[in-house]
Image (cartoon, rainbow, N blue to C red; front, side, top):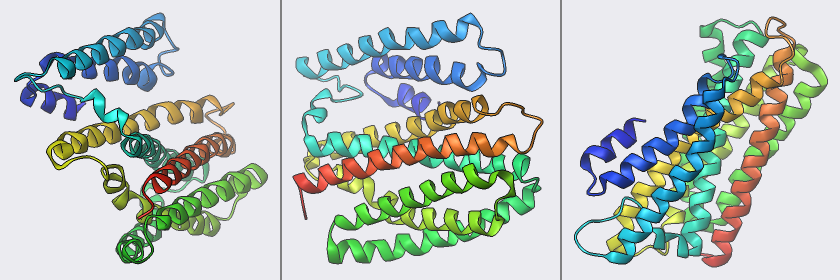
Amino acid sequence: MTIFANELSNSGDPIGAMGAAMTVAAILIPLTIGRSAGWPMWAWVCMVAAIPIAVATLRWERYLTNRGGGTLPLFDITLLRLPIFRAGLLANAAFMCFFGSFMFTLTLLLQFGLDLNAFQAGLVFAPAGVAFSVSALVGRWLLARHGRRVLLIGSLLTASSLGLIAINLSLTGTHTSLALIVCLTALASFGNGIVLPSLIGAALVEVTSERAGLAAGVLNTVQQFASASGVAIIGALFFAAIPNLRDMGDYAIGMTWATAANFALVLLVTFQIRRVIQADPK
């Protein structure tokens, strides 16, 4: 919620900033604490109320955009008329939804399913961090040499790794090889390093320089919202799929479902990247 607090204080469109903040809060707060509270009525009311709040906010933004004048809208609706920006925005949202939730659910599996302590679980992520750093550096060179098709390779590499993790856990449960989990996570992270650094730039290809700042701000906001939403939504799916929270073996079931959902999100990223390449193959 920090980004919305900053926008509310700095934006010339306080109504839009407040509407966006209320929409996010009405969705994320129930998803975050609703399960532990037994899904009370207020949680469902809040999530339903998010729909008219979002619609009213978008209508206000459209009004400001069409009116013109000194007050700049928080979100320029006309940006969605740009096909590359639209596809890039969805790709960024889907990727960050996967990225935040995968780290969260994998940590739960490692500590509560595989019974690793915090230090041991952290070591599992070390090869993934190295892989991400290496691919982020190599990816810039590959992108300059071969164009945006490199992003497709990165996203397919991530999707393949997630698919293998889900299949492996569904077959072996918590008896899985920790070394295999480490390798597949590092492989997914290698793909992430190719995709993530270039995803915002790919979305801004057809945005004019005068609107680049606004468009980048929209992308940054969507990324943060998607990351928080991924943790809340896929985290809820993770726990909902676990029959018994006290049974370590059941955590593999939750991770299987969560990883399958993330696999679908990365496929969506791949599809949207393909649309960007078709529109601008450079």
